[in-house]
Image (cartoon, rainbow over all chains, first blue to last red; front, side):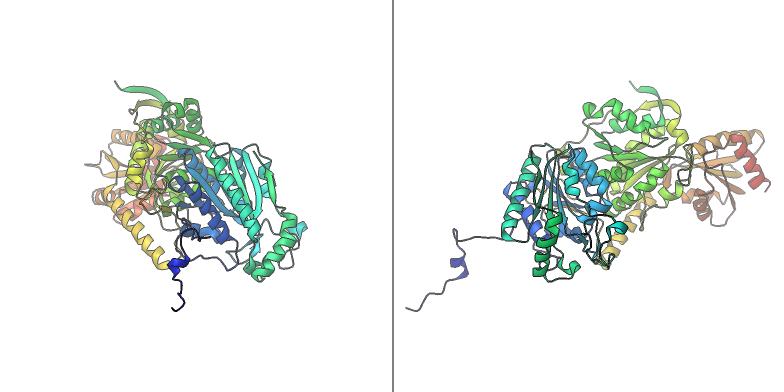
Length: 258
Length: 361
């Protein structure tokens, strides 16, 4: 008898599945560059919402920046905010729907520059929302300009000779700032460029959404990410550079725990 | 039995909001409208009806809180005065683009810049013509009494939800601050979450229930063809509102030889001026636009066939007069009169302007 060739159905049978397409991600093609951390951060957020059974009560807010189209990929009810205003939208949502699960997904330009006031005050009021903050140290969407989080000496299209901190100011550590506020309950910094860190980041996101269910205050998860196109590096080099430079300035770990 | 109270215009708006079953108010203090949030905080509507009241960190944040809550299908409002409205324009444009119903109350003060805290009507351009970016329109109601400050809250929400469009009560420092007798509307029950879901679940972000597609509230459409189509949809909606929702009051226009067009507190002052004019033997009528957008173009155009001249009276350097001229389309002379920068004209001054600019002019 000829060797039996296994069919896909025989290969993918119950018990042998190790990974499935995230249920709450749409089939739309991601708009992110290959190697970018956004896709992973999207997936983790949606996996957590699915696993916690929050699909029907979740309302997300997308920012302006690379993840402006997050609502095209995250298969839950979503609102698109003006640049920096996502925490204000989330405040409005959560105040009229205190029992729903509300999150914002924002980049560093959105959260730490134009939306600084909205972010700090939402955290300071202890809004029961979860803020997912992607920090890649650059404005990716608009073509690689300097962000509030751009490292000293780091080159961008508006700091072409490197960020001169005397002229352009210092990188802003928003996560440490919001951790100081009594309104925040859980503040952590994670990354998603290695499998181990992806697993840790997912645990942190899960913890943030679990704490939101207890209505104890704002939960804030920074994810230090890469921007290989903005940094003008290969995805591999960008991850290496992130490890060697970004994580020195933005060390990983929980900054505030309940 | 009807409930009558002596109230400031700002307080009347606040009380009417609680009674209209408003779900949330987000605001930031600014003179001369701070009594709105002060009254609400004092009244504790979260105990009376469950209404949310929150003082935001800025007008920007307040209007964006309105965006977030309005996108949930809730009845949401904010209030401010001119410089604060300038700040809100970003959010207002986004809400117009995303087709979100809400109420914005503007108790206008003199400008430009910090200007003055005294009454003005110089926000006509920024509210009626759209102070934010893009082709959009706001439904603009202009109260001329404290009673109308109260009555227009419910009307504004009715129109805002009917057309999924922001609505405005364009008041001024006179109406906001003065006290008059108000017949308060009866208390309406706020909609439950289930009722909101049933009524607005087709578009609002209420949480993606089993079996329905996710709802997305956005003003972004990167494909130009689709953005143009969305704009055509908005324009069709604006045309329908223009056809159906024009409101105005006509006083002594039947046999008028001359016409004043004035809204808000200027209409109150002009009403006195036309009485004084009658004593002098002049037949002067008054058209008081109640909706500034849609503007009562047709009636003014019709009256232009009858009268010898029209005076547009407003506390500005001449903003609404442009719409009066467009309505008249050159048929008769149209002039503007108004004190501005925080000054309020008297009936004598209006009559004098009418005589000099229109009757003898």
